Image (cartoon, rainbow, N blue to C red; front, side, top):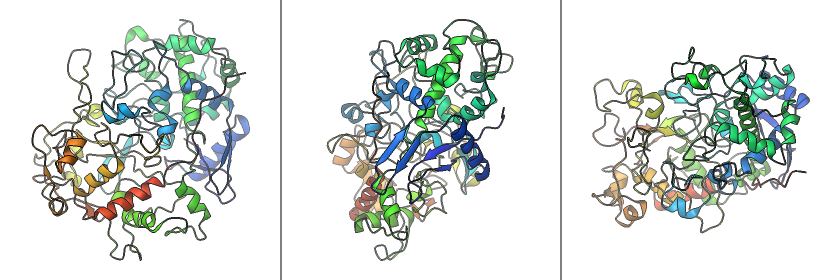
Amino acid sequence: MKSNHIKVSVRVGSNQNGSLSFFSKTRSALGAILIAGCLVGVVFGYATAKSNKSGDIDIELTNIEKLGKYVFFDKISSPKRMGCVTCHDPKTGGTGSVAGVNLHQVAITGANPHTIGNLKPPTNAYATFIGPLAPCNFGVPGWCGGNFWNSRSEGNEWPPQFPEGAAKHLGEEVFYKTDGTPLPDDLQDAYSLYFGPTADQALNPMPNPVEQNIDRKAVCQHVKSAKYAPLYKLVWGVDIDCSDTPVAVSAPDMDPLVNTQADPSLFPEKAFDISFKRIMLAVCAWQASPDLNSFSSRRDIELRNDEDGLFPLDGFTDEENLGHDLFYGVESALNPDGKSAGCAGCHSDNPGADTGEEPEQLYSDDGFHNIGVPRNPEIPPTYNADGTLIDPDLGLAGLTGVVGDPLSPGCTAGGFRRNCDHRGFHKTTTLRNVNKRKGEGFTKAYTHNGWFKSMESIVHFYNTGLIGGPTADSFGITRCPDGIETERDALANNCWPAPAYANPLQPGSPTFGAVLGGGRFGDLGLTLEEEAAIVAYLKTFTDTHTAKAPKPYK
């Protein structure tokens, strides 16, 4: 059994012949990844998938991926009105599926109709490529990895980086029977590859009273009685056990002798806890499959079809190619001055090195940034158990507890204030499927609190959000007066509201006008035509393949 697990996911369409390739977003050694990938393929299998130059994909899922897909699309909640797909719909790029909700309250109403969340659901597409939360440095020290907007699902073995804020971890306890007998080594080696932030995240929504509102034991019983229940034994080699029998091997984070935050009444874990975790690991396995991460966008197709695989792409319009050049700051016939919008400074797997020609580019540094998003007054207020108001804009500080004065002496060590105040810093999401929607009239919401309702408006904000900067002044954009709080009203009044938390790139900050990829955030100097070119380029990231609900199990 391995103690240091290698995270491997399958990406489709990276080769001209349409064969599969393996790649780890955690940047583990390629040789080890290939060995691990072959082991899984031989013993338990990954989904098989073939793609051609037109983007058509034929996918056959393995048993663990099938089980996860059935659970993902099943309405497992109390009352029975909500599933994982409710918040993470493949038809809308793995996020909110109701246009009216996106347009207004943004947060999803729970299975209990008297409850509601407080953030926009982040996309689950391509999330399994994100590594565990860890220190990183793309020129500025910070944190990268993890799942959720604040990465509280760290994906780390015990102990996590931030024990007081981290969500529960899904780990090796799933590989033991109730009496402590280990499951076969080959099964452990295969399924441990799915451990990580997305597996940890999967533990949270079902028991959450403002989401699916169903406890672990009830989830176990639901799956045990479902028509697809036989998949559980095919996957795990044991019957699903929903009893209260204490297990011999519990998770370290459940043990009060190991974790001071643990609840002694919940230790040791019960048989139903382990069954629940195995079910959730299957959900993660499906989310790691080509069914959800197909790399089938027009950008992927045109890149494969292009004679030299370099920009400008033959199959792109001039506007789309210009969007790429502005995104990366490329000097070209379309962009003779090499103007940069600085997008790749955050929305790139390897900022400063990537060119946009990487077959499996995810368009995210997996880091945290405060771009000065305003508060969204249309998200209904929610409260903690002690009656205190939940702050939906807190960001990374909700995990780390790092809160301070952004203008205090010494706060800008390393060139940024993230080392003394994490409020307002949120995960950089992938740009893949950023425009995937149910139709032209469908409204999507953008950023953690969904304040922005169109790609055009958020790109305009990136260009002009620095109030007092030359670009904002050239457009006549000012700070909104009190009472103008929504995107609709702000655009109508040609102003931007104050950020929820002081943006370090605003006037008065020690880092005012910081340079990102050649352009100052919020002061990019783009024309409206250049903004439109970037939007056109982003629209090419929409996958042509969409995962569909599974057919009834037979």
